[in-house]
Image 1 (cartoon, rainbow, N blue to C red):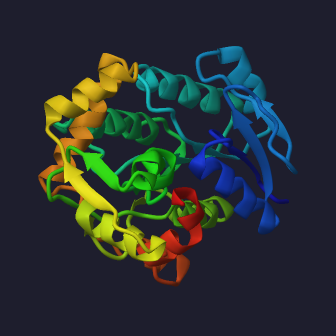
Image 2 (cartoon, rainbow, N blue to C red; image 1 turned 60 degrees about the vertical axis):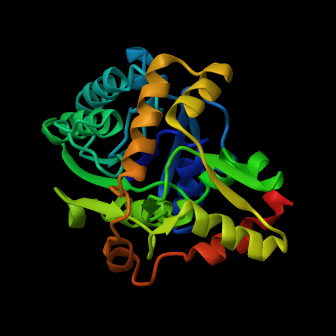
Length: 283
């Protein structure tokens, strides 16, 4: 009998693509999100991570849970709620989407928070697999498209390099694990692209495809913080995002892992392909 997979965060970057790939592979997949907004072509359940009753209903009859948390101040609490509900519902495996550098003892805020959630999952008594993707290539569409259209990329990351990974690869890896979870029990996978790029490299490659100059302009931490405050970001979000920026500037996001290649049997999607596929977002 086929297992039933529930994908949380199914309306986001990773979750949406993951549902598409699981459905294409013939898996029995159910989509969920805090809002319960319908996902085309699959059963959709509302899973409010702050509401125990909502989780109890959403997790009913689920064998394998894909757990993706929103980046917000109470995300550790939300993770605890999800783990407790999974145990009560008899979920047999959790595939947790974490983040690069996750470590409960990390001095870096974003790594510490992600590490605390990983520890909750690992100590839950439920079989688990953890994937730790580095920064998404798609961030240059989701967050920075306006700047790129205007010809410049302003970030407080110095000359730091990042082994950016395509969301489509993140989804493909997680789909592979979710279809055969027992083969990956207790494993932690680091998900990166095939090379590390600086923001200057990124700007140059996007500019080449667009046929015009795109420049990377490093900004100070103070300028970045002021910009985030002006945009209405809360103190927790600013702290976490600035911790990521500092980690990148220090060269701590540049490591390249072979895990995507090993799990998919092919090289990770190259940055050039990502740019070609998404060029319309910056025109």
